[in-house]
Length: 111
Image 1 (cartoon, rainbow, N blue to C red):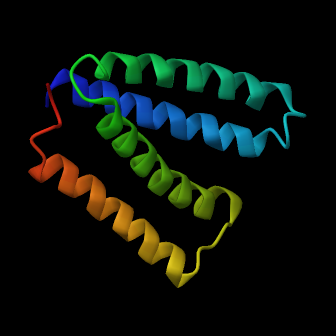
Image 2 (cartoon, rainbow, N blue to C red):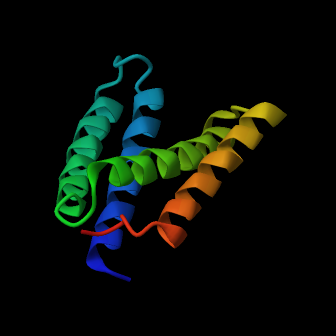
């Protein structure tokens, strides 16, 4: 796997951790989750910046945000008992399809 995809995966995972910490912070009232949020997002942006050296910003952001949405939805279900209706699941399936199309068929994923 190319290094820029490893960096992108790290960015997505760190963004997911940061977003989960945001939920756990209870509107920024708990200091430890707020600290985790700040550090996680900081490192996520750092890794995403590394990826931007070899991939266009639109594609990086599409993959980063689309993959993050799916991970957050899954984690929200298990950690916070947040259930999704059928329309939400279909919408997220379309996001996954879009990320797959970009990675499998687009010639724009590296420059």
